[in-house]
Structure formats: C-alpha cells, structure tokens
Amino acid sequence: MLHMKVTQSPKENKMNLYLNKSTKLNFPQDKDKYQSTTIPNLPSWNLDDLYKSTESKELTLDLEWLNEECVNFENDFKSNLSKLSADSFLHCLTRYEKIQNITGRIMSFAGLRYYQSTTDSDRTKFLSDMQEKITIYSRHLVFFSLEINQIDDERLEALLKSNKALNRYKPVFDNLRKLKSHQLSDELEEFLHDQSVVGSTAWNRLFDETIAALKFTVNGEELNIESALNLMSDNNRENRKAGAEEVAKVLGENISIFSRITNTLSKEKEIEDRWRKMPSPQTGRHLSNDVEPEVVEALRNAVVNSYSNTSHRYYQLKAQWMGLDKMEIWDRNAPLPNHDEKFITWDEAKETVLSAYEDFSPEIAESAKPFFENGWIDAEVKPGKAPGAFAHPTVTNVHPYILINYLGKPRDVMTLAHELGHGVHQILAAKQGELLSSTPLTLAETASVFGEMLTFNKLLSQVNNNTDRKILLARKVEDMINTVIRQIAFYDFECKLHDARRAGELTSGQINEIWMSVQEESLGPCFNFMPGYETFWSYVPHFIHSPFYVYAYAFGDGLVNALYSTYEEGVPDFQKKYIKMLEAGGTKHHSDLLKPFGLDARDPKFWNKGLNVIAGMIDELEKIG
Image (cartoon, rainbow, N blue to C red; front, side, top):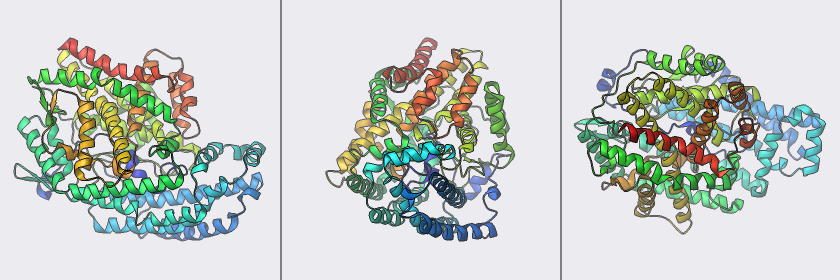
C-alpha cells in the first residue's frame, strides 16, 4: 500500500498516511457496554468493489497474474531500459502502472479489512500473508527505479520530447531522479526491500498491536486508549483528571517496549540514511513531499515564533474562562465552561457537510455524495476497529474508502468534513492514473482542511448570539492549534529525537525529556504538567509509521488558510481553479498549483498570513470575553 507509489519508501504504510490529527474517540471494549452506545444509521464499508472475499476467484487470479507479470516484467526490461525507444518505454510504463494497480487493489482490500478489526487474528494473518506475497513478487521490480536513474539525462529528455504520451509521465521521472544521488547498488536495494518484512514492517505491527491491546480502567470501566484519551475532553474535570492519570499509568508501565520500538526504528533509519548519504533525517520526507527544506524551515520558524501570539495567548484566555490561574494538562481539550455539546445524529452530520460543500461548488458536492450512498464510509465505533480517521484512495479504477469513529460530537462532524475532503480530492485526481494521482503529503491535506473550513463557516453563519459564536470560534482555534502548533511541536520532537539517537541508544527518560522540552515551549506557561505526561509521546502513531509526516498537517492548514482568504476576497473563477488544482494530483509542484491564486509558499509572509487567521480568531474571542 504505497501512498506515493514511486517516490515513497515501500516500507511506509499507505493507510497510516491519512490518519486524522484528531483521535479523541470514546468507546468501551466491553461488548455489552459497547452495544448500549451504538448510534443508529451509521454506515459500514462494502468492500465488494475491491474483492468479495478473501477466497474470491478474482483475488486468486490477480495474485497469480501479479506473480507471473512481475517476473515477466523483470525478464523483459531489466538491463534494457536505457535502450528502449519512446514507444517501448511507454509500453513499459503502462505495464508497470497496471502492476501497481493490482498491487494496490490487493493491499487495500487486506488493509481495510484489518483496520475494521485489528484484533481479529484471521484478518491480521491475511494482511501479513498478502504483505509477504507482495514483497516477494515486487522484488522483481526493484531494478526499475534504479535503472531509470542510470539513464543519461540527455537521452531521457530526448525520449520524453519525442512522445507526448510518454512526456505526460515526466513528473514520475523527476521525482525518481531526485533520489538518484541517494540510490544504493541493485543488490543492496533488493536486500532492503526483502528485509523490510521482518524489519520496520514488523516493528510497526508490534506498535499497532501493543496499542490496541492496552487496557485502561477508569471509574470501574475498562477502556481502550481512545476511550481513555477522550476522557480528557470530558465536561467533568474529575473525569479528565482520572483519564489522564490512567493513561499516564498504563503508558508508564509499557514505556520500555515503546522506547525499544522507537530506538530500533530510529537507528534503522539512521543506518539507511547514512548509506544513502542523506544530509539529514528529514531529507527523505522532504524529497517525497516534493518540498524544499528551506520552505519547511520557514514554516517551522514562523509557527514557533507565533507561539506567544497563538497557543500561549489562547490557553491563557481559556484558563480565565475556567476560573484558573493555571490549567492542568488534562484541561487542554476541556469543553468550555457551562457548555453541553449537542448530540448530532449521523443524518444531521451528513446534511451539514454536504450542504457546506454544495454552497461552495455543486461539482464538489456531487463527488462527495457516493461516499454516503455506496458503502464507502465506515463510521460505527466497534471494539478492535482502528482509532482515529483516514481516507484511503485504494486504486484509481475503484474509489476511496473513509474510516471514522462517529460519536455524535461537533468535532466528529468536522472530522467527517476533513476526510470527505480527502475522498473528493482522491476521486478528482484519479483521472491522472496510478503513477500520477497521488499528491505530495504537503498538498494531500489541502482539500481536507478546506472542507473543514467550509463546514466551520457554514456553522458559524447559522449562529446569532455571542455565546454560540464563542463556542464555535474556540473549538476552531483549538483544532487549528492542534493542527499547526501541536504538529510543529511534534516535528521538533522528532528532529531532536533522531538527532539524539545518532549519538547512541536513548533511555526512556531521555526521550521523555525531549518530549517535555517541546511541550513546555509550545503550550506555554499557563499549564501544570502532571507526573507521567512525559510518556505521552509513546502513543502517537505518526512517529512510528511515517517519520516527519506531521509537518504536512501544518503545511496544509497554513496553505488552506491563505487559500481560503483569497476565496473570501473574491478571486475570479476560484472554484474552477480549485477543482483544477485537485484534479492535478501529483503532476505539479506546489508553486505551480498556487500560482493561479497569486500565492507562493516560499514567501515567509505566506505562512504568517495563515497564522494571522488563528490570531484574528483569538482577537475576536478576547473581545467577546
């Protein structure tokens, strides 16, 4: 399940790249209690568009075809790529693209089944079996990217110019050749490919299974980690405290295994980076994101410099609302005082999001409707189901699937808007084909965050009093802080962690100290940090599955804030330009996609424009009081 198909490491699990930043869920593991909390009319996936079952004839035939075609592909093209004519090269790419398509179809089916019930041993075994088969089959493809990078620049340029259909794949070649100087020998690349099954993939699975198996007992109830974390946004302060303390206790009891996983994966990355001559631990992520390091550094610096004017100022304001000189860390996501959140039915959530999309663009809304009508969303909260939310694009001749855990909270509605934005983006980009449809991660959040903003502003337009306006604004500010401020703090944590790991294995205490240094800096002086909070880094899946992914959230949010400002300013034909941007998939650089809107991410003022949106909302909240 490769997200970037070509430019991304095959070790990285596609599904995890769409994990939503919000993982505040709440469901008990006890079956009877679970049944009593069921919300009616929640949809579940229908995976028949991929395969009807693990025993289906179509799946068996695809596996047989894939096994044979990978061998044939290697026999036909290995050691010959540099000699191919333009027409033959196009034929080669077409065959490679079909292999990617069938691979993606199989692994999407296996992965989606697994994420519906991660504690089901049969589903776990099926996913593992498919991963092993695909790894064995695809080892015959390792030569492909290596040999492309061995083709002379002038020769490749001449081939592309001589054939319009082949030239369409130029972004694929450009992305591959960015990695040219970091490429290892054919034998080493093949070894790394084969070894990943018992290396990073195995450690990733250990993390997932360990997290899923953790049990938290609060007020006599046995909960999973999402249920316990969700207590920290409970109306009752004692429940928030109890949830936080229990999470700290259980994570503390398991911190050795999480430290071992983190140490091992960080060291493995350091070894591979060293062999590939990557100048920094972040380089591989920047290359796969097709973003310049200086752009990320400008984003990071702008956000860090904004801490006092954004997160510090907001949390001080929230402490005043709560009648506290200082908040405890378990108060960070607390609801506002004297506010009971309305329960929102699934049908109400669907209507809210679709109408917000419709108001913006009927074409966007039409792309969104099939998700609700055809079993493309899995929303029910179930024991063993993957936490959080994601939109998985599967393959371009099928359709995306969305996973959320819906509990009827306003934040769940925003999560639905977010993931539906991903899904629409993936549908519109699918016309680019398997190798060109996936966007860099920095742009993958564009439609999702834009969808959130559309939904938020629709809700805001419907309120007619300061109390409700304050609640909506405060919730949006907190979400933006979690998306921008918190994710950049996560990025700083990873940078410091990987740098420190290069000097030797890190103790749990050392990792905890790094975590606390960035938390104290980003959250500010109005918090007390309870004993045990230093272990909270250990449950964040992004650190394990996709190192340095987190800055993509801040990139996407900052980009959308700037983009939405131009929409509100009345840029001509904004909707048409926006849809074209989404349809482009991975065919254009972020600078080219933003140019029609008069925006440039290389300009330091670009990021400040986005951060000013957050600051402006805090200004309004201060006036409301």
